Length: 489
Image 1 (tube, rainbow, N blue to C red):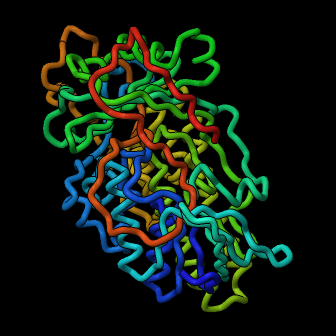
Image 2 (image 1 turned 180 degrees about the vertical axis):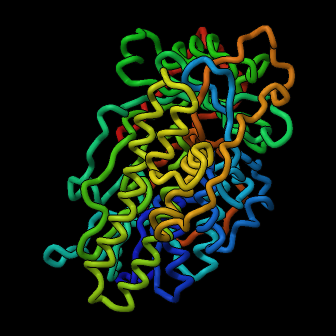
């Protein structure tokens, strides 16, 4: 690469938000450079996708590749949440024409998106670290970076710098923009299990979300036969327990209902991982010559599995905005302000709903009512449909980025879906059906292992690397292996 080069847009970070932004801008004919710190494929948390990602996947031209890569289809979610009403669920088809999304191994999914950005014309450089941001007054004009294994510094200039570095959030740290959501400062611990029991029919790919008195479990079945199972709890609850994270996980799993039935007789197939303090929103998402997208801008708790949707829908909105600005620089202030306004509107609705949803004393109908109040205050749709819409991430498309949704006919409230026929195979029916639970779950991690990618070029920008501790045989929870504290967010 040249010692100094000029681009329309430089994207720091090659995860879903960065790759989608870069690919869509390159597709529109702009000169784009992607700097990714790691060499893909690489492990990352966040395997459970919702249908809010589909419009961006379609515009990138990769939706069909999801099935070709063998990812599990996910038709909705099963919940054990709220008051003791047993398991309940939602289906994506209740809210849109999208029948299913996928449960993905993020190493494979992210590698596919980065490869697609290359195919569309973006210049992708892996194994590079951004060392400095260039400024001209208060305007960002480029970056200085180094390549792994080299000492020389390289300079790249641009008209706009996009920070898609996830929870590294380089620009947010430089400009001191991060604001934590104090009431959502949680810690998650997760691992992978083999030989779990499975649901039948369209529930086979469901994310299962089960509440516990002081936390909740996710259960995400992956195509390789393993299942990601994680436990989330407030940090103060973890500290008050006096247990290690592995001990707390084992205790809660032993007292769970649905997730315990599904994992009964299973074998643990990976080391434990954890992350903490991850819910935040930046005070600004854009400024002169720069913009944030995805986790670099905000992360609103993993409870509803919205992380990748936020990144990819944000990327679509950002690409449209930057395309307009690059063609007519006089529109920059107004166009980028609109990008931030729309992004915040969706984030705000999610944050409001997540906070309400964490009240586990309510009935499922209360959650339906809250979803309707949040996204459909005129009650144009049945409340259960609004709930499915909220959990599918489609409010970002219909109600924010693409303008108001056209009024739909007022349908009769559908009856609750049957539960008995969908019990997991082999589940012990003597066990109580359980509590009522939330919707789509967070996006945990995926096992490291992905299809080989084309060898990347030179550089890269830090997306939070979490190289998995070695997999291997089951670990005895009575003798927990050393549990690494997550890198600070």
